[in-house]
Image (cartoon, rainbow, N blue to C red; front, side, top):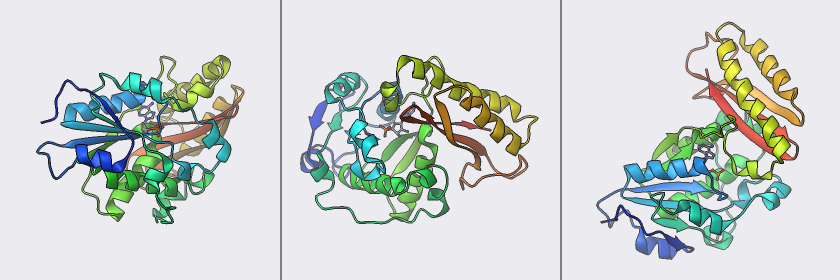
Length: 285
Ligand code: AMP
Protein backbone atom coordinates (compact mmCIF):
# COMPACT_ATOMS: atom_id res chain seq x y z
CA UNK A 1 0.00 0.00 0.00
CA UNK A 2 2.96 2.36 0.52
CA UNK A 3 4.86 2.90 -2.73
CA UNK A 4 8.52 1.97 -3.01
CA UNK A 5 9.31 4.90 -5.29
CA UNK A 6 8.61 7.53 -2.79
CA UNK A 7 7.04 10.95 -2.96
CA UNK A 8 8.08 12.54 0.25
CA UNK A 9 5.68 14.68 2.22
CA UNK A 10 6.46 17.27 4.90
CA UNK A 11 4.08 17.17 7.86
CA UNK A 12 4.12 19.48 10.86
CA UNK A 13 1.23 18.35 13.07
CA UNK A 14 0.56 15.13 14.92
CA UNK A 15 -3.05 14.97 13.68
CA UNK A 16 -1.99 15.30 10.03
CA UNK A 17 0.59 12.58 10.52
CA UNK A 18 -1.95 10.29 12.17
CA UNK A 19 -4.26 10.69 9.18
CA UNK A 20 -1.51 9.51 6.84
CA UNK A 21 0.25 6.95 9.02
CA UNK A 22 -1.70 4.70 11.31
CA UNK A 23 -0.34 1.42 12.54
CA UNK A 24 -3.83 -0.03 12.93
CA UNK A 25 -4.86 0.79 9.36
CA UNK A 26 -2.03 -0.64 7.40
CA UNK A 27 -0.96 -4.15 6.59
CA UNK A 28 2.75 -3.32 6.34
CA UNK A 29 5.17 -1.94 8.91
CA UNK A 30 6.16 1.58 9.85
CA UNK A 31 9.84 2.38 10.40
CA UNK A 32 10.75 5.52 12.32
CA UNK A 33 13.98 7.51 12.42
CA UNK A 34 14.05 10.29 15.04
CA UNK A 35 16.60 13.05 14.35
CA UNK A 36 17.39 16.61 15.33
CA UNK A 37 18.07 17.60 11.70
CA UNK A 38 21.30 19.00 10.22
CA UNK A 39 21.26 15.66 8.48
CA UNK A 40 24.30 13.84 7.16
CA UNK A 41 25.15 10.44 5.70
CA UNK A 42 24.91 8.84 9.17
CA UNK A 43 21.24 9.80 9.44
CA UNK A 44 20.62 8.75 5.85
CA UNK A 45 22.04 5.28 6.56
CA UNK A 46 19.36 4.87 9.24
CA UNK A 47 16.65 6.01 6.82
CA UNK A 48 17.85 3.61 4.12
CA UNK A 49 17.88 0.73 6.59
CA UNK A 50 14.34 1.65 7.68
CA UNK A 51 13.25 1.80 4.03
CA UNK A 52 14.73 -1.64 3.35
CA UNK A 53 12.88 -3.18 6.30
CA UNK A 54 9.50 -1.38 6.30
CA UNK A 55 6.67 -0.31 4.00
CA UNK A 56 6.45 3.20 5.36
CA UNK A 57 9.26 5.38 6.72
CA UNK A 58 8.79 8.42 8.94
CA UNK A 59 11.74 10.69 9.76
CA UNK A 60 11.27 13.29 12.47
CA UNK A 61 13.28 16.50 12.57
CA UNK A 62 12.94 18.15 15.92
CA UNK A 63 15.54 19.93 18.03
CA UNK A 64 14.30 18.91 21.45
CA UNK A 65 14.81 21.68 24.00
CA UNK A 66 14.33 19.39 27.01
CA UNK A 67 17.48 17.36 26.33
CA UNK A 68 19.85 20.34 26.22
CA UNK A 69 21.38 20.92 29.62
CA UNK A 70 23.37 23.78 28.07
CA UNK A 71 21.21 26.57 26.61
CA UNK A 72 24.11 27.86 24.47
CA UNK A 73 24.41 24.42 22.88
CA UNK A 74 20.67 24.58 22.04
CA UNK A 75 21.04 28.02 20.47
CA UNK A 76 24.10 26.99 18.50
CA UNK A 77 22.64 23.70 17.28
CA UNK A 78 22.65 23.77 13.43
CA UNK A 79 19.23 23.96 11.74
CA UNK A 80 18.52 23.81 8.02
CA UNK A 81 15.21 22.21 7.06
CA UNK A 82 15.57 22.89 3.34
CA UNK A 83 18.96 21.17 3.11
CA UNK A 84 17.58 18.29 5.20
CA UNK A 85 14.63 17.81 2.85
CA UNK A 86 16.99 17.75 -0.13
CA UNK A 87 19.15 15.12 1.49
CA UNK A 88 16.12 12.99 2.37
CA UNK A 89 14.84 12.96 -1.22
CA UNK A 90 15.38 9.50 -2.70
CA UNK A 91 16.47 8.08 0.67
CA UNK A 92 13.27 6.03 1.03
CA UNK A 93 11.57 8.45 3.45
CA UNK A 94 7.80 8.83 2.98
CA UNK A 95 6.99 11.40 5.64
CA UNK A 96 9.16 14.06 7.25
CA UNK A 97 7.63 15.06 10.55
CA UNK A 98 8.97 18.49 11.56
CA UNK A 99 6.76 19.75 14.39
CA UNK A 100 6.97 22.96 16.41
CA UNK A 101 7.82 22.67 20.10
CA UNK A 102 4.15 23.22 21.12
CA UNK A 103 3.10 20.31 18.93
CA UNK A 104 5.38 17.90 20.77
CA UNK A 105 4.83 19.49 24.19
CA UNK A 106 1.31 21.03 24.31
CA UNK A 107 2.05 21.21 28.03
CA UNK A 108 5.41 21.06 29.76
CA UNK A 109 6.51 17.44 30.14
CA UNK A 110 7.07 16.89 33.86
CA UNK A 111 7.74 13.17 33.67
CA UNK A 112 10.84 11.90 35.43
CA UNK A 113 12.12 8.55 34.22
CA UNK A 114 14.19 6.18 36.30
CA UNK A 115 16.82 4.70 34.01
CA UNK A 116 18.73 3.39 37.02
CA UNK A 117 22.51 3.07 36.75
CA UNK A 118 22.39 3.59 32.98
CA UNK A 119 22.03 7.34 33.49
CA UNK A 120 24.53 7.89 36.28
CA UNK A 121 27.62 7.29 34.14
CA UNK A 122 29.34 9.01 31.19
CA UNK A 123 26.88 11.28 29.30
CA UNK A 124 24.45 11.07 32.21
CA UNK A 125 27.11 12.25 34.64
CA UNK A 126 28.37 15.13 32.52
CA UNK A 127 25.01 16.20 31.04
CA UNK A 128 22.57 16.21 33.97
CA UNK A 129 18.95 15.89 32.82
CA UNK A 130 19.95 15.05 29.25
CA UNK A 131 18.62 11.50 29.19
CA UNK A 132 15.42 12.45 30.93
CA UNK A 133 14.85 14.91 28.06
CA UNK A 134 15.70 12.20 25.53
CA UNK A 135 13.19 9.90 27.24
CA UNK A 136 10.52 12.59 27.09
CA UNK A 137 10.94 13.40 23.42
CA UNK A 138 11.34 9.84 22.23
CA UNK A 139 8.26 8.69 24.11
CA UNK A 140 6.23 11.68 22.79
CA UNK A 141 7.39 10.87 19.25
CA UNK A 142 6.70 7.14 19.73
CA UNK A 143 3.17 8.03 20.89
CA UNK A 144 2.59 10.21 17.83
CA UNK A 145 4.19 8.00 15.16
CA UNK A 146 3.43 4.63 16.77
CA UNK A 147 5.95 2.74 14.63
CA UNK A 148 6.73 -0.97 14.48
CA UNK A 149 10.47 -0.30 14.41
CA UNK A 150 12.68 2.63 15.37
CA UNK A 151 16.26 3.13 14.19
CA UNK A 152 19.06 4.56 16.33
CA UNK A 153 22.79 5.02 15.69
CA UNK A 154 25.43 3.20 17.72
CA UNK A 155 27.37 6.46 17.82
CA UNK A 156 25.11 7.43 20.73
CA UNK A 157 25.76 4.12 22.48
CA UNK A 158 24.46 5.15 25.89
CA UNK A 159 21.37 6.72 24.34
CA UNK A 160 20.58 3.40 22.69
CA UNK A 161 20.71 1.64 26.07
CA UNK A 162 18.43 4.35 27.53
CA UNK A 163 15.92 3.95 24.67
CA UNK A 164 15.79 0.18 25.17
CA UNK A 165 15.13 0.80 28.86
CA UNK A 166 12.43 3.36 27.98
CA UNK A 167 10.70 0.80 25.76
CA UNK A 168 10.74 -1.69 28.63
CA UNK A 169 9.57 0.86 31.23
CA UNK A 170 6.65 2.13 29.12
CA UNK A 171 5.85 -1.24 27.50
CA UNK A 172 6.12 -0.02 23.92
CA UNK A 173 5.60 -2.67 21.26
CA UNK A 174 8.43 -1.24 19.16
CA UNK A 175 11.56 -2.99 17.93
CA UNK A 176 14.69 -0.88 18.48
CA UNK A 177 17.18 -1.35 15.66
CA UNK A 178 20.82 -0.32 16.34
CA UNK A 179 22.72 0.93 13.26
CA UNK A 180 26.50 1.14 12.71
CA UNK A 181 28.48 4.38 13.01
CA UNK A 182 29.11 6.18 9.71
CA UNK A 183 32.45 8.01 9.54
CA UNK A 184 34.21 10.60 7.47
CA UNK A 185 37.16 9.38 5.42
CA UNK A 186 39.43 10.60 8.25
CA UNK A 187 37.61 8.28 10.64
CA UNK A 188 35.82 11.11 12.48
CA UNK A 189 32.28 9.97 13.30
CA UNK A 190 29.74 12.00 11.33
CA UNK A 191 27.85 14.39 13.58
CA UNK A 192 25.66 17.43 13.05
CA UNK A 193 28.04 19.22 15.40
CA UNK A 194 30.97 18.67 12.98
CA UNK A 195 29.51 21.60 10.99
CA UNK A 196 30.54 23.85 13.85
CA UNK A 197 34.23 22.86 13.62
CA UNK A 198 36.80 24.96 11.79
CA UNK A 199 38.81 23.08 9.12
CA UNK A 200 41.80 22.88 11.50
CA UNK A 201 39.63 21.58 14.37
CA UNK A 202 38.06 19.02 12.09
CA UNK A 203 41.47 17.75 11.08
CA UNK A 204 42.56 17.41 14.71
CA UNK A 205 39.27 15.74 15.65
CA UNK A 206 40.29 12.79 13.48
CA UNK A 207 42.73 11.90 16.28
CA UNK A 208 39.76 10.69 18.35
CA UNK A 209 38.95 7.69 16.18
CA UNK A 210 42.59 7.08 15.27
CA UNK A 211 43.32 6.72 18.98
CA UNK A 212 40.29 4.51 19.62
CA UNK A 213 41.33 2.20 16.78
CA UNK A 214 44.85 1.96 18.17
CA UNK A 215 43.39 1.30 21.63
CA UNK A 216 41.51 -1.62 20.13
CA UNK A 217 44.86 -3.15 19.08
CA UNK A 218 46.54 -2.31 22.40
CA UNK A 219 43.73 -3.96 24.37
CA UNK A 220 45.26 -7.31 23.43
CA UNK A 221 48.21 -6.69 25.73
CA UNK A 222 47.51 -3.60 27.88
CA UNK A 223 45.59 -3.50 31.16
CA UNK A 224 42.27 -1.61 31.27
CA UNK A 225 43.46 1.22 33.54
CA UNK A 226 46.69 1.71 31.57
CA UNK A 227 44.79 1.81 28.30
CA UNK A 228 42.36 4.41 29.67
CA UNK A 229 45.24 6.68 30.72
CA UNK A 230 46.95 6.18 27.36
CA UNK A 231 43.83 7.12 25.35
CA UNK A 232 43.26 10.29 27.37
CA UNK A 233 46.92 11.32 27.09
CA UNK A 234 47.08 10.55 23.38
CA UNK A 235 43.90 12.46 22.42
CA UNK A 236 44.88 15.45 24.57
CA UNK A 237 48.11 15.72 22.59
CA UNK A 238 46.10 17.24 19.75
CA UNK A 239 44.93 20.67 20.86
CA UNK A 240 42.25 21.90 21.06
CA UNK A 241 41.08 18.36 21.87
CA UNK A 242 40.33 18.02 25.57
CA UNK A 243 38.96 14.69 26.81
CA UNK A 244 35.99 14.98 29.18
CA UNK A 245 35.92 11.24 29.86
CA UNK A 246 37.03 7.96 28.40
CA UNK A 247 35.58 4.89 30.05
CA UNK A 248 35.63 1.19 29.28
CA UNK A 249 32.28 -0.26 30.32
CA UNK A 250 30.16 -3.37 30.09
CA UNK A 251 28.05 -2.99 26.96
CA UNK A 252 24.81 -3.90 28.73
CA UNK A 253 25.12 -2.36 32.19
CA UNK A 254 27.38 0.54 31.08
CA UNK A 255 29.28 0.15 34.36
CA UNK A 256 33.09 0.47 34.25
CA UNK A 257 35.04 -2.77 33.98
CA UNK A 258 38.31 -3.16 35.84
CA UNK A 259 39.87 -6.05 33.90
CA UNK A 260 39.43 -7.65 30.49
CA UNK A 261 38.41 -10.82 32.36
CA UNK A 262 35.14 -9.22 33.48
CA UNK A 263 32.32 -11.12 31.75
CA UNK A 264 30.41 -9.67 28.79
CA UNK A 265 31.10 -7.40 25.84
CA UNK A 266 33.01 -4.19 26.49
CA UNK A 267 32.91 -0.79 24.90
CA UNK A 268 35.13 2.25 25.24
CA UNK A 269 33.15 5.50 25.20
CA UNK A 270 34.72 8.91 24.83
CA UNK A 271 33.56 12.53 25.02
CA UNK A 272 35.97 15.19 23.83
CA UNK A 273 35.78 18.97 23.66
CA UNK A 274 37.14 20.29 20.40
CA UNK A 275 37.17 24.02 21.10
CA UNK A 276 33.52 24.84 21.92
CA UNK A 277 32.16 21.68 20.29
CA UNK A 278 31.60 18.48 22.22
CA UNK A 279 32.10 15.23 20.28
CA UNK A 280 31.42 11.63 21.28
CA UNK A 281 32.53 8.32 19.83
CA UNK A 282 33.07 4.73 20.90
CA UNK A 283 34.85 1.52 20.06
CA UNK A 284 34.00 -2.03 21.04
CA UNK A 285 36.59 -4.33 22.62
P1 AMP B 1 20.77 13.29 16.13
O1 AMP B 1 20.17 14.05 15.00
O2 AMP B 1 22.19 13.66 16.39
O3 AMP B 1 19.89 13.27 17.34
O4 AMP B 1 20.87 11.78 15.64
C1 AMP B 1 19.74 11.09 15.19
C2 AMP B 1 20.09 9.64 15.05
O5 AMP B 1 21.14 9.48 14.11
C3 AMP B 1 20.58 9.03 16.36
O6 AMP B 1 20.03 7.72 16.48
C4 AMP B 1 22.06 8.99 16.17
O7 AMP B 1 22.69 7.98 16.92
C5 AMP B 1 22.16 8.71 14.69
N1 AMP B 1 23.47 9.12 14.19
C6 AMP B 1 24.07 10.32 14.37
N2 AMP B 1 25.30 10.32 13.82
C7 AMP B 1 25.49 9.08 13.31
C8 AMP B 1 26.57 8.44 12.63
N3 AMP B 1 27.72 9.07 12.36
N4 AMP B 1 26.41 7.15 12.24
C9 AMP B 1 25.25 6.49 12.51
N5 AMP B 1 24.20 7.05 13.14
C10 AMP B 1 24.31 8.31 13.54
